[in-house]
Amino acid sequence: MRRLPPVLIEDGCSRELVSLIRTILAACKEISFRVGQGALSGVLGSTLDENIQGETQKKLDVLSNQLLKDILLESGYVKAIASEEEDYTVAGNPKANYIVAFDPLDGSSNTDINSLVGTIFSIMEAPEGSDPSDPAIFMQPGHKQVAAGYVLYGPSTMLALSTGKGTRLFTLDKTHGSFLLTQDFAAIPEDTKEFAINASNQRHWTPAMQNYIADLLEGETGPRGKNFNMRWIAAMVGDVHRVLCRGGLFTYPEDRKDPNKPFKLRLLYEANPMAMLIEQAGGIAHTGRERILDIQPEEIHQRVGVILGSKHEVEACLTYHK
Ligand SMILES: O=P(O)(O)OC[C@H]1O[C@](O)(COP(=O)(O)O)[C@@H](O)[C@@H]1O
Ligand SMILES: [Mg+2]
Ligand SMILES: [Mg+2]
Image 1 (cartoon, rainbow, N blue to C red):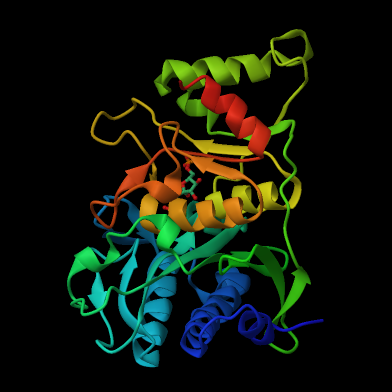
Image 2 (image 1 turned 120 degrees about the horizontal axis):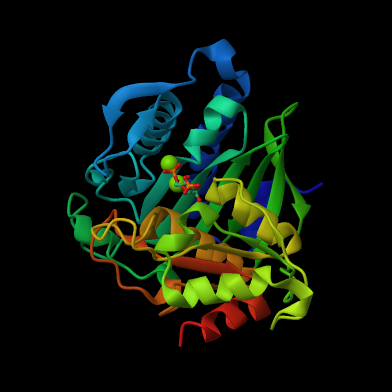
């Protein structure tokens, strides 16, 4: 089976980009080990702290962030980093050409129940002559990503990665510590009978989303003329992985629960990298108003609505939003 570095070199990635991706994966292997040890490594449960977004940090959120941050900054391959768990961007090597935004542990409420979690990352080029300590360096639309991926810590540890030449899936061989190519080009089926949404927010959704989901729930006697199944892992990384493997529609839509926070998922380190992986596998990633990868970011922790997955189903959902 083919290992990761030769695949990236064949795709024409620069040596520096290959080294940067390998550096991220070195940290992810360590996170995978700590997650796998569970209660044995004393890292379950919450800290007494909150991040800048007002969310209680899990011990594993803090640990994963520290591992990624230390390894990336020591490597010299990054000019700056942005993380869900860092209030502000952090400057790296001024001579480096790339910047990385990451969610060190996605779905971290799942850590205490031994369920799916993962790390999501997005790599962009640093604009020439940019100041590594200026957050403006990250204000680039997602279509400028040169690589995006996630590492899923499940029964096996898997990497989904795109450098703009399709989306590939790798599995970590824990006996050798290498990521081996296990699916060359993921292709999301265009049609699906599966959707994923946190239905407890139903009363807060926009009328468009209320109507769309209501029609799905009516099944074969309703306007869609077929029965749908529902899945919810409560970790975007797990839900998106299922969509990449067998299709489906995943959404965390706009809602009116809290007028100051109409969206849940973060653009730079959740929506953008997942949108690139989904589009590169033939799917669609949209907010209901626009293509996610075309959004011009305004701040590093910006949130957006997300509707992604199987082409025809996302298109069907979007017709309700016109
Ligand atoms: O609690 P809910 O509404 O099910 O939200 C789950 C969503 O929140 C998230 O866990 C947010 O990510 P973090 O765990 O990194 O904060 C998503 O992965 C997931 O889709
Ligand atoms: Mg997350
Ligand atoms: Mg997180």
